Image (cartoon, rainbow, N blue to C red):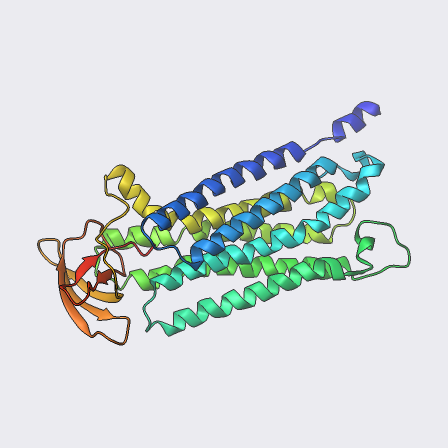
Length: 351
């Protein structure tokens, strides 16, 4: 009999720790490479800052999950020492708000990145992105709040309190399923929307396809979110939850990881060019008193960009230009207006 019980006392916690910290380490490398590239080419923006916040929330979540594993996550509850059972249940609830809010923060970063690619005329795309950013963030904030207000007092979630009043566990589970499904939908939306932007550019089919793939990597996190949706029903399990929640924690960590990796990958194109094609990151010339322009360009036979630059300020009209870029630009460039002298173009990656 004791041998049977010993065989059932399986601890999957170390497997979770390996998943957590491997993913976090790789995600950290990607985020800091992104920040390095953006600082180097002087295009640091709110999408980079929100991605850094995503990484910070991811670090907090993984740290709390490590405490949770220490107390018994990954084992059957009957094999967790009695003095740790209340602790493992408590930490299970304490970690959830941080993990929940990491998801909208990552999606906000990806959305802000896409907004940088859009021209002022694409109002319908911007409305879709902003509307979903606000709606999803509110939805997930409510999910974080529901984690604790479902019981009065909240301590009843991890302690036996006969007089406590709690919601039906299926309420939170159903909300979590809806949130996971919405998150999966957003991942696919954010992955497919760049196709509508890139496909109208005057680029070769090969380059269009490459850009669509690069900007559409979020499909991977969408697939992960879809799988996690099926696991979210385990939040309604209040018996042997330390064992039942293993898959949900593993897939939740992987979803956050993929959001960060897929969101950072497009921004690392200049680093790839610098490493494999010896193109310096700090491309272009600098001068004081610069003005920003949006270019309408075509590529000539001698591989130069020919077209007009429309000022994004109200003081300058259009300027013709010819330039042989050191980088192959995608959508937006800058022209330096050096105190009324001949404009000199400076090309930058927008991603």
